[in-house]
Length: 245
Ligand code: NAP
Image (cartoon, rainbow, N blue to C red; front, side, top):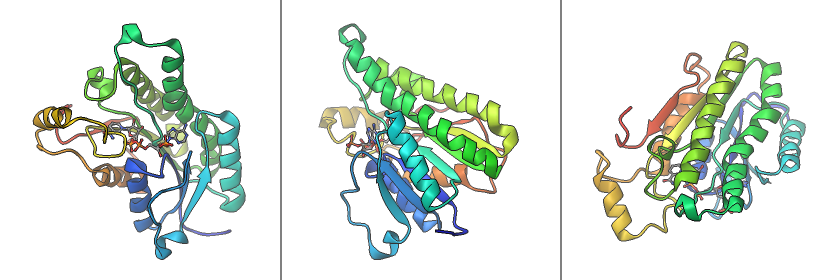
């Protein structure tokens, strides 16, 4: 398939924040490949079908990531945008956390983005162009609390450092890598929060409402824009004013 449209890979793109990013990129004229453990549950309308492709992928599995990137290159021949969005949350106090849980969270939240970046950046280097956005969380800066615990916060802190390192290493080659930190966003991930937790969370947000997946997707558009060639290595909080730095 040959095309002049830019191609974006969105991990964890089948639901929640990821799917909103997919819809927003499609509306902005991108081809999008969703890399997720499961296909989108929502119906993809006829106009979207021509530009969205679902490819099963476990971001924590090196071979699965390699297969994904090979598939995309065979089908489209280029990758302009990579959104590392897939992630899992973790709860419970540190002293009762098993090593297995710690390792699983880091494997998906940190090793996943590493594997994707490792396999996609060489393609972006050849193109002399690439836009990478890694999704972390405000938990990286607060130590967690609302839903994610210390392990989750630490994994998302590592995502911020990963982005900064990539920005430093490849910024000269037309590749940017930024981190987006969502605040409290209403998705299947946060649906398990109790009424009390939601009320408590919203009280602390100056916007006095939870964020929507679309709030995150709009910020992504700015970071991946071809015209945006001088924002690199930043950590952008999209949180209704919660963190304020
Ligand atoms: P979500 O509703 O749980 O969606 C995440 C998607 O990623 C799901 O489709 C999930 O599949 C998929 N996924 C999980 N592990 C994967 C793997 N190993 N390989 C490929 N796909 C995998 O989560 P969300 O709320 O949209 O969150 C998206 C990102 O934003 C995450 O990184 C999260 O940490 C971050 N974030 C969210 C919030 C919030 O308030 N929602 C706040 C801060 C940061 P399964 O459903 O099968 O697991």
